[in-house]
Each structure stands twice: as C-alpha cells, then as structure tokens.
Image (cartoon, rainbow, N blue to C red; front, side, top):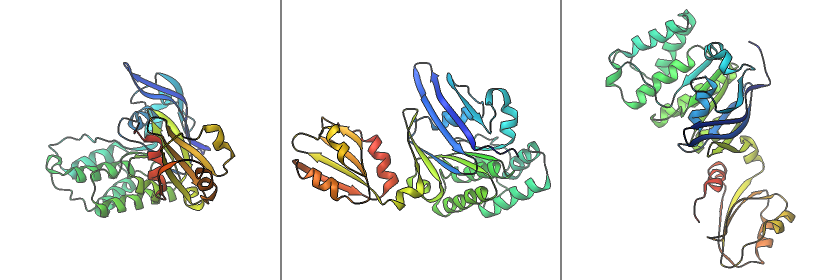
Length: 304
C-alpha cells in the first residue's frame, strides 16, 4: 500500500444542493493512520463530505483527494480501498443476514480471509445470521453495516454515525474494533454527535458547523492542558475583544451582545480570567471540564 502523509485532503470544498449550501469552503487534512472524528449535528455537512470522498456525489467547487487520488478520476480504486458505513444502510429486506454477508464477501473477491473476518465479526457483535433483513431491529441492521465496512481490512474506514442504534455494550465493542483497525494500519474517519466516543477513540477531531470546519483539536491535548470552558453572563457592559488580548491561555469562543454572554476556553489556571472579570458586573459564571461537549456547545450556543 502506498503511504501518504495525509489520507484525506480537502481544500476550499463547497457543495450546493440548489439554494442549500451543504459544504462551505471546507478545508481539512487527515493524517494517514489516525482515527479522526467529525463532530457536528444533523445537517452540518458530515454525510455530504463522506459521499464526496467516495464520488457518490460531486463537489460544486474545490478539491479533495484520498491517498493522493482524485475521487472524480479514481473512484473505483478509492472504493476498493475503503470500508463505508452509511448513515442509512439500505439492504434487500427479503433475504437473510447470511445471504447478504455472503453477497458482499463475493463482491470483495470472496477470499477465505474476508469470509473468516466477516463471520468472526458477526460472532463478536452477537449477530444472528438466519433472520431475514426485514425482521431485524435498527441495531442489528447497523451490525451488518459494521461487518461489511470492516471485513476486508480496508486502508480507509468511512463511518457515518457508527454506533447509531446500538446498545451500550455493542457500542463499546464497536469502538474496540475501531481501535483494532487502526492498530492494523487503517485510517479511520468517523462522523458522530456523541461526545464520549469522540473522547475515547479519536486521535484528533474537527467541529463542523454550517458545512465548514471551525476547529480541529488533538483529543489528548484537551486533557493534558486541563482545558475549562467558562460561560459568563454580564449585567452591564461586556468586555471589548481587544481588552481580552492581554489574557494568557484564554481564548474567546462565543459572543452575544444581546444576551450579554461570553464563552471562554481556558487552558490551565483560571486565576487571570477571574481577576479580569472582577472589574465587571457579572451576573452568572459557569464552568465545565467536560471539554469536548462544552467546546462544541461554545460554538453552537444559540441564545441571543
């Protein structure tokens, strides 16, 4: 397998569906061999981005590459090297689980290794192979999608909400399988809106809003630097942005002049921020160390 520093590169990527802007000047680089989380709510552009990587849809403007290959020109090769779990898995409802797995195993070449992997995964996920698809719960259909994505040990895994519909024990098993794939050399790109799984499994993650990447973080850094999210509501005037520049290890994440609210991210001690705030009429101050969740909401705070 050819090695590239970046498994995925997107530059100024835009996608319009009529008047709706699904991706807006998106820029992103994902390292080869890492587990990368794409964190955002429904409609933020996560699924659109994955589908562009596979050339299932095409961008309006901008460029994207997967292992140095352009999806528009090399979609067959890219798809052969990928494992894809879509957000909505559509299967023939009238055949059995075993039949659908065998069908996709044959599409992947039908090797004994892929066959064995598929059935080992089905055992690990406690998936009964005999029922017809139409009789399965959402969770069991999701298990099929996971098997089909992982069974051929792909170079790149594209997972759209991989734990959706799964019970907590199975969710844990899936995250273990994701880590095992990384250990075997796969790059993993997973979209999610579940903060805990981003924290547990990813090396880095991006927060996406309105089709744009607005922040990219190394997951471990948030714990190492003891990051705290601070939300402050003022009774009177709020500090001007320029006055905040003197504060070390403090960054402003959100401003609402109407509700007189500021959200800060503090790396390390809060002493300097608290001393600064003592000169203002503060109505309420809230802190949290659930860093990924609060970092996300600091960008999505909709109160005005």
